[in-house]
Image 1 (tube, rainbow, N blue to C red):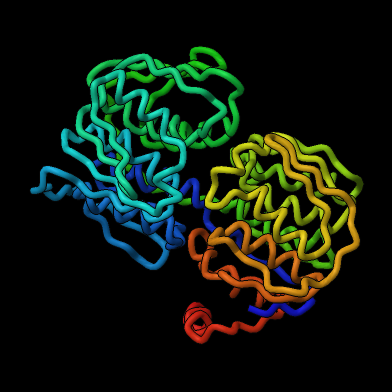
Image 2: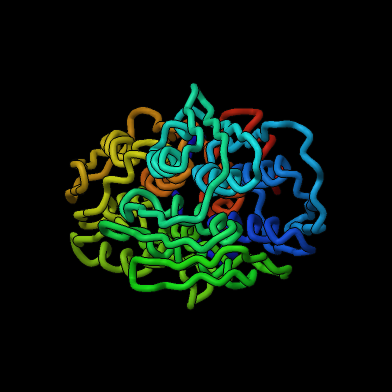
Length: 412
């Protein structure tokens, strides 16, 4: 795609929260009752979660932007359930504990980068409970049943492990304790999970700031839910407002528990000075925050270590791509420094590194200089209509790939 220097103006409705969509869909499925989840966008990650629910025998009907669960469950004739997670880290980490409640062998498929993301939390739990857990090529195999227990999890790895256990532990025969050690990063994602579970009638109690009590033998209730707007993806549209744009985002809850809503304050800081920001609780904002910093006064970011294990090594690849604009960016183990630089139009094409957040961040950068970017299809992972949205706002581009151009036309 060739991006022409242009600015964004107008309004757009916030995309549905991908994080909340995963949670509502799984909870509705576990209720085994009639439930409806509204305001769904069918990104690749959400499709992966739906595939896994189908693999479990969950019966549901897909509508334009909602999903109806019948409450019926199809029998599973095979000894082994195949969960195809594609490239969705949430799907994989949420479903592993759930699979361990089904009394079936399970095989999880996914891209090489997904399967080889850190899984030590689940490996250790399975080892302690004599459950088979094997990583083979691009798959993970499990065999055994999860038992109620006291689980100790580091809070600085990924909150997805905690959420996965919170889905499964209420279903077990017996009460469980979940203790979180070390710095509790991305706590907001756990609070989002607890909010959804409460809506479905699941009672989980904080004993203290890092310890959860989960009563066993609970049942998920039937409910009708609407997915709220997504701050994570809205950050890419509102980033245009830090440049010369004027975009109004509608459909975001001011009282949302989403941690990524912090971008509102972070953008203000970056526009004023070379701000010092901690992104340990909002790592998904990293790439777009780096762009805003590069286009203003620079920035110093701590809590960046987990960017190494996302869809790409986000710190390293942003350093590589922003260097093409002349940006001085230094990457350390848990810190990234961006110095104020003279920005120029890239002489060579940018690479999206098969990472949706990298692509959308780089497109924001290119809107200020113009230039070419490859690998734009990565946005389908979380926001398939991203380019349709920014075109309506006034960002000008030309798609070079005929197949990709047809897909964009279809989305209109």
